[in-house]
Image (cartoon, rainbow, N blue to C red):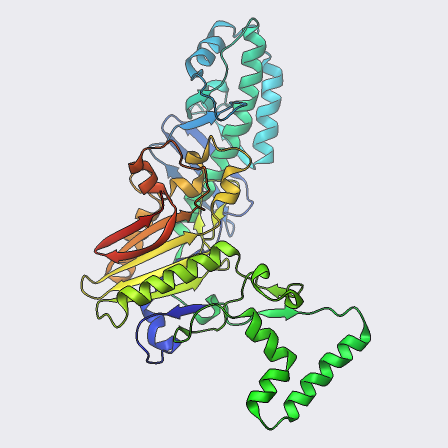
Length: 430
């Protein structure tokens, strides 16, 4: 689904599609083996692409933060220096054989061939060179057991994060920059209804046939069960809104009980997504109706537009993409919005959400993902772009509580609605 909100004239896909520039994911790094050379702040790697060996370098490696707190709500010391010193002090007593087994196992599991800068097998020193902070309890009465245990866990986590970062580095060069295509939109839904008894199915078909024979179109719509389902599932926005594909499919709890067991693909909107569309549409219509400066386009995104992440998930597919075309300043704003973004981030805890990849890409001063995409879009299309990503929280959400207002403004939004006037303005229920 994609709709445009402003005047009352009709709009065709060919009329606006060339305006909606976007990026899409190209070929991914896949599951092939990477040879990796650890060299301080630079990571050199090679991999095969269609039987051709290709090199790559990650310069200015960002040090990893490893959080091993059992209670994420409580602070813990940084034990990086304790661990480094213990590895030097107790080198002769540590279980190097077991550590070497873990190093080999994790490298094989993540399909990495790892080498130190001297072209030797990596040691714990090489892994620690990729780490900046380790939050964990201080060593107790048995510093050797503490060091052995922490060394093995660091090898496991650093190897996985190294693989993810290399894959993201490779994939970031494989974006495809092109206008939106019609196949990128949801242009149809499949609705499946199950019947408990054959008689119910026969009655359903009979009513459809009777409606098809009815000469009065209005009456036919009232007695046709298929038409009734379409109308009930799709009642969302007030008349006058134009859709490339209409309707949006309502959440299960917002339809009559007789329609709640229908199976819909792609999925119906959930309550948060429905509220986002309603609030945004209402605000745009009230504030920018018949304006001459801006055009607004909203797309429900079902794994068509994705952003590569340095995480196990690999990619982030925001629920909605909103284009705002500023004719006056000749800037295309692209907003990625995820109304249910909190769900997978908290993961049962709230202490480490700042390091979640979905949160980090919103911090453009610290994460270059969106900035690089802006520059590439500008190079491809010779115009200005501004990209922003937002996770929309419920008013009851605890995420962000205790943070200063400036941090909350940068990352998380309890959004009622928002507008563009030069820069993005926000109205929050904080």
